[in-house]
Length: 588
Ligand code: ATP
View (spheres, rainbow, N blue to C red):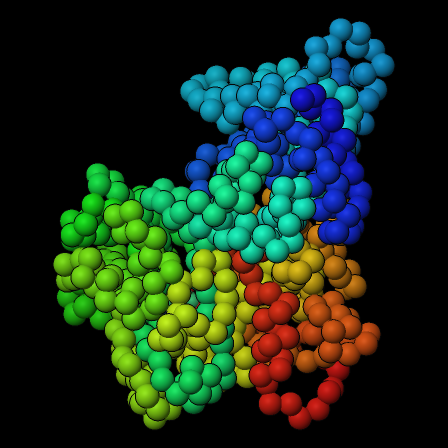
């Protein structure tokens, strides 16, 4: 297929705001695509070359892309740079300058999707001392044979700015529309949730229909989307919701890992699908040593402990293990244990369909428990009093709260879903009216006084799962220490956007906009109806959204969460409804 046909589809997707329309455009398109190219096309539509759990990045610096554009278009780098600064979008720069060049170029070899995919892969894989030059030339070579729209998307892909709206959910909808029915949509989503590879799911359904989709199973090496918990405001409500009887585990405050234990090697994934094996090599080794079976996929929380006393240390201690450099020292200095809470697969058996109590006992018997490899502490509870008791012991053990888990026959592991089979309750709920929020930064306001010349406050948004858009909930200006204020540009500026990003719904206008990339943990006093914030706008009251009052940054950058994994608008509505409400006062 010619790359220009694909670029035209990207253009059409980008120019529609409606998810339904996007789905139809995509479905009509992929129905006619050569099956052997579908996988690549799906990755490219998301600005990728492979699924997220493959730890390879295109890694082209903005400056190199600028150089390639100016080299191909015959424009000076300073002119290209000026345009870049003005538009903030490398795609637009390429489009404008290449369009001028096009009128002059006579001999261009047409670009195919295959050539683009191979070219981008070569850029990704270029190594060694000439790698920068090689990358620049590879891009320039493709730009040379590009039309303006093709150039726009090439430059967005290589700079990680490809956001045409083809999110996972839209692609899954399109796959159902193109190759199956609406009723098949949940099964297609499950296939994605247990493989985390949307290109593979697309190829499978296109080639083998629903029969092939239903044959996809949990396998070692393909991370599974994690199951998440709902929340309730008191232990008694938790126990009641579970039908008066449930299992309760300590809720450890560490880093969640999903361990894929193979016969000879182990890989650890974060909930964001990053490879954390080199951050916890000791845990990987201990899991392999203590696992009594050939293969297993388990989940647990990695927590830092005092090596002398075995006491658990606060979350900050384990974050030293998330650094990119100096890992050898961090491994020596910070002693870590894994507290396992689930098993999803063992020696060819998909265990996600097995009920909780059975999974737990299989988990325990899969390992020789001890030393670095422990089970989460759990108690079966039959009354609110027993629940309260156990909660108190969790807090005494320095945990952040409890995780109640259903023991009903239907208590399977629901990959990728947040539901009431698991319910969390944290000690923080006793102080604030709500849980903490993990919000995406979508804008910043310049500071005044002591904060002059810096970002003084941030515009924060929640993710709306139904629309795939980010909706604002607060302006955050509290909880920043000097070090964080100084680090903000480095943390945020890669996502700078010239205007309000397409996927953001906001009425408040900050001084600068960001594409959502960074997630911060925020606590607040209360959720209220808000005339200015756009979260759940019109859902609870006409002309009002939901905002959070007195928000404060906790100091925790949730780099384990992608923006789409931040607190959802649906969760904020639930938390609002959970709050004891005195009035309908409007917040600022
Ligand atoms: P939080 O910020 O509260 O961790 P979250 O959005 O990251 O919330 P939740 O589903 O709300 O995720 O809480 C579940 C998280 O709690 C898990 O992702 C895991 O990291 C952690 N956790 C700690 N102890 C347990 C346990 N015993 N069982 C399951 N998850 C646990």
